[in-house]
Image (cartoon, rainbow, N blue to C red; front, side, top):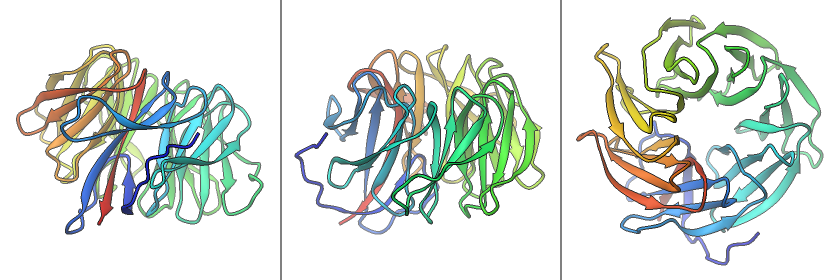
Length: 321
């Protein structure tokens, strides 16, 4: 599982979406996770296809990144594993065995991994500092799809697809602070840069539940496209980018109540990441095996990049020379 290409740059941050400021002289890089191809590959500027694939185990599904490191954590629900990938060196560092079907995932600075079991109603907490995973389980709703950690790492939000709600888990005592009803089949989630709003895509409702993270309640429910599956927020917090799987589009929602703009992309779009300047979005198109690059100022797709089969997730990283 080793990619021979060396990665010389030191990593300042690795992120699923962007709310951070880019350091002077920093360079931005984008990676795509492909399920059928079982790889994590780089999307290079000007290239017609993804390059330098890192080979993974069977059917990778969801990924997250460790704060301030170059380690990516990727779930494999079909085989009950989590891959720990050293992106800087292009290799799989180790593989963790996780009971059940690990899907949604989040990791803290103190090396704790929160993993949702897609075929059950709990999340597991794994102590990465120890050699043996902790068997701590926290009861949540059914089919925990995605996890979203607040920047201060006090809370983990869990989208429960089959329970139509979001669980709010405290990271200190591992208790559930609240359960928030949302729309039908919540899946994608994204926090605003100031962490005051959580946007939840409701797959079967074609809507986005907007949660006030202080009140822990839904405050509005704008319409998106058919089957919202991925979400990200621009660095200024002004726009929410939602991928609509069935529609083959991306919706751009604003906070001023205007109807969302719609952008045509590839087939079955899922994961989305936004560049640090807020001007570009990268969308993984699961069925057309490519990544759409979107100009967010012009609200249009500007190019497609071929990727290994079944791209489902996108991450963006910032490197410092």
